[in-house]
Image (cartoon, rainbow, N blue to C red; front, side, top):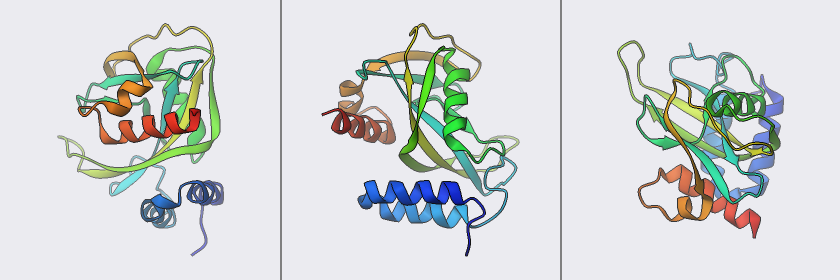
Length: 183
């Protein structure tokens, strides 16, 4: 089946070449990408693509995490694509909106992917997020500003996130990937 979104398909192929151990997850993403024209729309009730930021300090030693207001967990900044199939742009937009940080830059290659279930809420059925994550680097001030989507923001040393058994498993995975990349 030909892809409606060949740029993301090519980016997933590139990610597979760099992370062959994640082949099963990548296959799920590719099947979902080819499944429907509305996979970037929040209205696609079965699930949709989202873009997230592994938001790191200029020196690469810390990552900015947000205590998500709805999910009540510490996570990376990110959010719905809302029709935008350029998920690196979505990740950058969400990082800026959710952190208030100026001078952010996104790296173009996919850093991580994660498929996770979002529980049902009053007006929304449970659904899947196909989250595509990109490195976003802060190069200016590290003074962040809260918005309505977070209860708190905090810069955390990446090595602490990687070892924290209380941290979300995907955060630990991204921290470990980042540490391997930096060494």
